[in-house]
Amino acid sequence: MKTIALAAVATLMSAGVAFAADPLEGFWRTAKDDNGESGLIHVTPCGAKLCGKLVKAYDANGKEMASDNIGRNIISETVSKGGGSYKGKIYAPDRGKTYNSKLSLSGKSLKVSGCVLGICRDGGTWSKVK
Image (cartoon, rainbow, N blue to C red; front, top):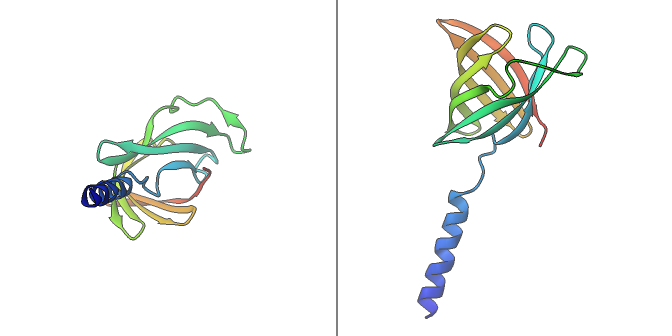
């Protein structure tokens, strides 16, 4: 009986680890783009990868604004490479382009960059909101 109880506890503990949220999950405020606008991105699992949808957009003064990109995946196909490093795709609404992304997570800061056809862009540092 003791062996069964220990096995059950071990199974539950390992399941807890398997279902632990990735540190990238949550809400992130983007850096301002070329137009001075920013957004609020909600990062969640999408299959075995991570995706981030634009849930709010802000104008250059920080006031919430309407955007055709609300609901669009800004981050897609993103996977952890370990040590706070991620690779995937990132869409830049101000340029209408999707880049191969490199994300570097450190606490509540996310350094974002991406490249397309050898042209790279610094996406600035995003801040975790919740």
